[in-house]
Amino acid sequence: MLSKKTKYGLKALTYIARQEGNKPVQVGEIAKSEQIPQKFLESILLTLRKSGCLGSKKGKHGGYYLIKKPSEIVMADVMRVLEGPIAMVPCVSLNFYEKCDDCPDENMCTVNKLMVQVRDSSLKVLRNTTLEDLSIK
Amino acid sequence: MLSKKTKYGLKALTYIARQEGNKPVQVGEIAKSEQIPQKFLESILLTLRKSGCLGSKKGKHGGYYLIKKPSEIVMADVMRVLEGPIAMVPCVSLNFYEKCDDCPDENMCTVNKLMVQVRDSSLKVLRNTTLEDLSIK
DNA sequence: GTAATTCCTACTAATTTAATAGGAATAATA
DNA sequence: TATTATTCCTATTAAATTAGTAGGAATTAC
Image (cartoon, each protein chain N blue to C red):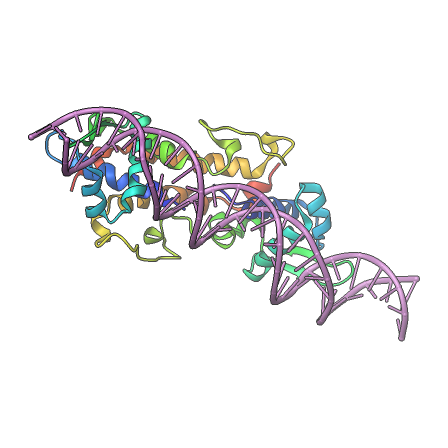
């Protein structure tokens, strides 16, 4: 299941992408419009900023804005920042690989074999979808 | 992330499918061989039996056995029994649909749009993979 | 200098997952 | 029939993760 964090993050990115110009959008505005707890959203946008998806401006009239074109913000990257690995098991993850405790031999593991395929199919979608695709109304 | 429950369940099914004949396989044997806590595995196999993937025999020399051919046990079904919905958001689930609390209009929701695609791509794999595919060494 | 905002850290609450405990019911077999 | 080995069932607990809150520091516009 997708965490609320990711869901809220995606909604917020879409909201920002839909704004005209590149003026900073305030957390409060997004929270209100998208029905997201404001403090929670604050922390999510902060994460996105640190990961390089968003820029921010502090102080009065501050807020968040995109620092890349929507067409350059790829869903696979956003998902990794918000949700973590795209693979369903760590032993299949490209960016967050970890060996399983059980499972003496990965290449013999049938769960591994299946999950590689699921990962690849999801990745295909997530790599081919950008924020632009989401924000077109 | 895949739960341990699902992971263990898939391993156990593979183990059973690889046995010769259709003799019942005991939980203890599977647990030992696959390094799964026995009591936990007991409850998992019980779930699989109730869902119609497995049959069981009680008492001495009892155990679990397949009641369908491995080629007829489809991963999409197994995953739904063990892991629940394949979709990452309930509002996109075919078998476990639920409306989102936030989100006034589903058709306008960008998260929904994206997750439909992810679901479809995963489902394609899971519907085309059977226990037979997993259990071939 | 005041008001409005992001930024940061720490904490708490709620939910889900993983596992354990204990024993009832059932079946084989000596 | 007694014993042993197994599945079956319910309840409980422990651990981990997710979701959200609290409070205030830092920064900026006006």
